[in-house]
Amino acid sequence: MHTDVQEILFTEEEVSAKVRELGEQITRDYQGQNLLVIGILKGAAMFMGDLVKRIGMLVEMDFMAVSSYGKSSESSGVVRIIKDLDKSIEDRHVLIVEDIIDTGLTLHYLKNLLQQRNAASVKVVSLLDKPERRKVEISPDYLGFSVPDHFIVGYGLDFAERYRNLPYIGVLKPEVYQS
Ligand code: 5GP
Image 1: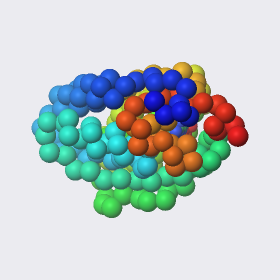
Image 2: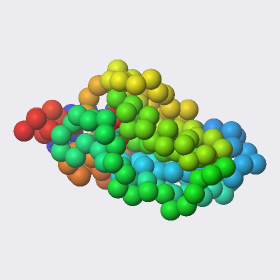
Image 3: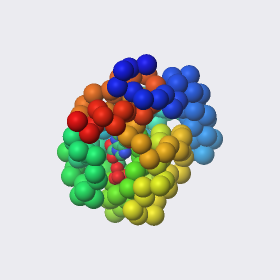
Image 4: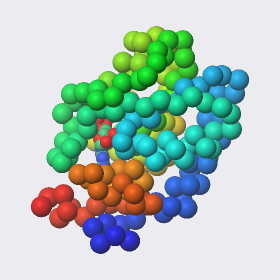
């Protein structure tokens, strides 16, 4: 375990088993449909890559990048699009892939935006959820794990661009982000 990590919440094996389960569920639910999977960069990149390999049919992939925490740890509610989708999503079945839902503000904004673009359907799969911190009422259609109100890193999630490549999901020591 990295010295900046206080506790491992989910090991690489546990994450992999959960991703497989989510992939199977999504495969069943979207049978016969032409699914467009949209990964939200950068936090969901690793989850997205592993998840689509567990979906047992051909899907299309696209990515969006939105402004997130940077070095501080408070969501402002203002979402800035840094990279938009490549193509129109009109009449498409869309699945947003998120790393973690915290206040819910980012996802609330993104879901509305994609619905306004006349997608046939917009659903959400999130690897993690911190329900205690919610400011707007929103929940994912598919969820990996609920986590307590700590700062989480690993498996794509960063603090100041570090820790993304840890293979497990863990809690960052408070002294690291408070210093
Ligand atoms: P929300 O808009 O729901 O408050 O924030 C969602 C985004 O904040 C996530 O996509 C993620 O980028 C970031 N975030 C929220 N909680 C955590 C956390 O515990 N660890 C990390 N690394 N990012 C978080």
